[in-house]
Image (tube, rainbow, N blue to C red; front, side, top):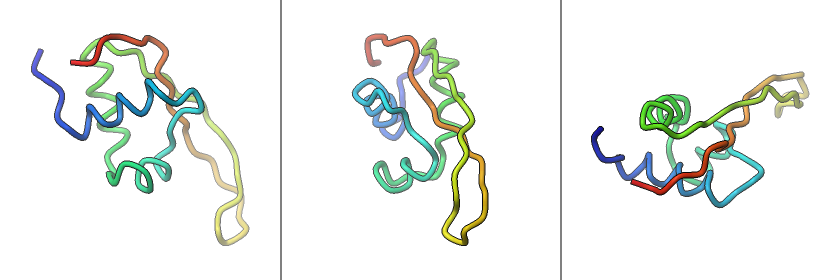
Length: 79
């Protein structure tokens, strides 16, 4: 399989180093990309086991919201 793109590698590195996982909003703020879901799919195709859990919260308008938090289950050597 092909080498990871720089953005994909940054997400993988972040997931390897942060047990709290990563949400889309975290990814935008910390890694400057909006493509977390696409990157997670790519990482899974590369053999990394990235799982997600649904979480609930309150958005900036005071409304209930649901979102996913992604975690790296299988830590492997970065490509």
